[in-house]
Picture 1: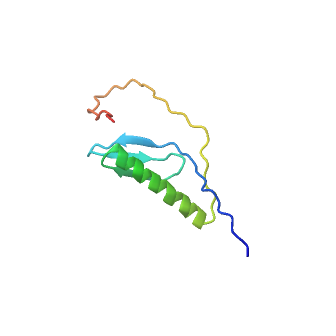
Picture 2: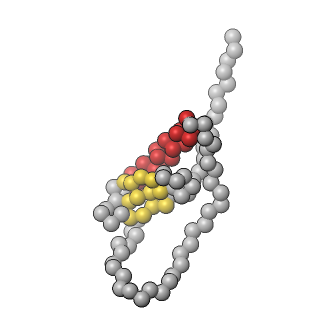
Picture 3: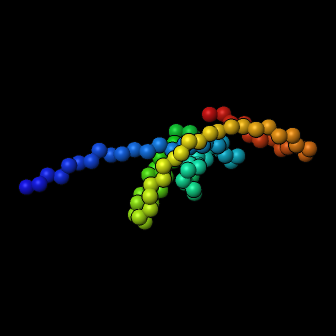
Length: 95
């Protein structure tokens, strides 16, 4: 009788960006996975939801015979630009 070797589950990591939503809560999106985004009432819920969204995204890729996308090096930056119009008040990010 042959025994099947169990495979250790693999894991992949992706950068996730969280933005405070104007109507409340947070939106989470994964730049390396186009269209992979979700939301939550708080950061903890948004993180749980984005983990589920990533898992479902990867399952969909596998089901369609597509390669699992690996994230390359990513960088985040901030730039300041002068503006000549009055800006509306933007909500500040408070984790």
